[in-house]
Image (cartoon, rainbow, N blue to C red; front, side):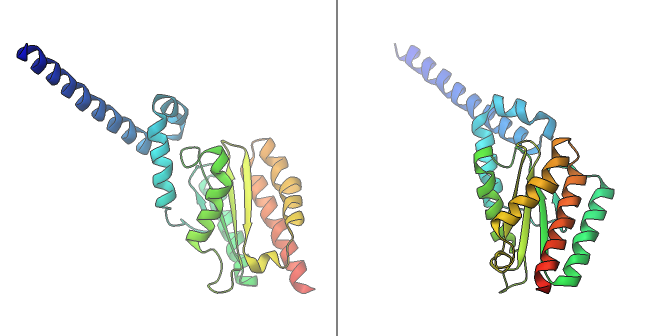
Length: 200
């Protein structure tokens, strides 16, 4: 009888150890897998994906440049043009614009807007004490875009105007899959609007 109990206990211990090893293996897979595997990993281990997203929230990476393309939707040439365009605008106006692309590993669809605001606060886009930054967050996987304006920007650009630029300049190209053209066109229009407002 004792032998049977001991045998059962050993089997349970082996099962627990194997289960923990499996969970750890899947978590590592989520952490280092390519974007192409994201849907497969999500189905295999939703808990690991949840843990990964929480880790991303708690440890927001530093911006790469004016454009942080974490979803790799832009080419190097695209990034150069976008960064140069934003840098020139910053030199002329003192207003900082950050652009970030996020894959579905980083955030769930329902938390995309919250993460965008969180990143804007963590990065502190804009000149310190002026709150004049803008963060444009793009999710190709969720087909979403959000623009977070600092308080100084909100004084000159209304939510209605921001939505109009998103609808009329970003979205049309996004719908055809051309995220670079949509981002560049939307950025330029947004910059021109700010410049016109500043002159008044």
